[in-house]
Length: 130
Image 1 (cartoon, rainbow, N blue to C red):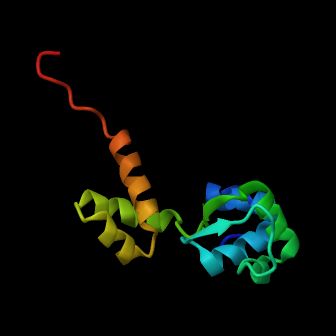
Image 2 (image 1 turned 120 degrees about the horizontal axis):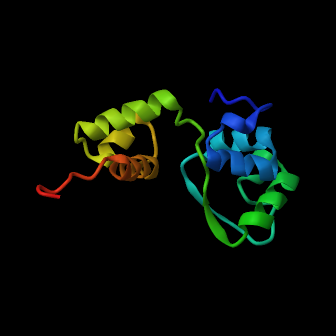
């Protein structure tokens, strides 16, 4: 992962949101450990949770304070411009979204989001006579 822990301004928004809660270094460690996977975040921090060993008890407590009681899909932070362009190219070729996710290493959710965004960005065809 080539994101700068000193400057979160160019990070993907989901990872930046987590970084603002637990700190940039902890967010990057969490993304490396669990990026793209959903985890239940308890309302109260527990020492046995797998995140504690990765980000520390204090950062985990902060994460519980915001996401406690919810499922959190940990952001990957890897969908850079080149990967996004590749996904958009494969979508334009008509490949299935699942296959694109597997081929590029992106989450299927990210591919679905880009597909929806691409559909919204396409101009609507004009009806004849209007």
